[in-house]
Length: 70
Image 1 (cartoon, rainbow, N blue to C red):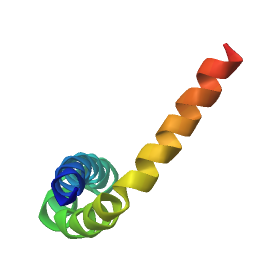
Image 2: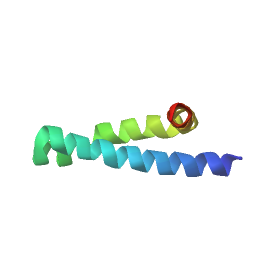
Image 3: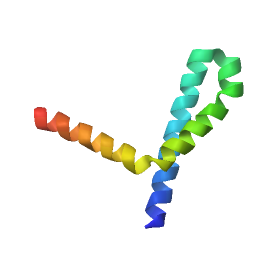
């Protein structure tokens, strides 16, 4: 079971890291966003990756509500 958690952690952390780094670049400009934006992006990605089962449950609940209301 640990393998599934590690795979989910890696996928989720990578997606969150790239997304938050792009967000930093868009908000703080190229120099600060690329140069310093990786550090907060790495921290947020680690936290989000550790909580990936909870994030998945939230997305599934939202999708279920959307499909139920169609």
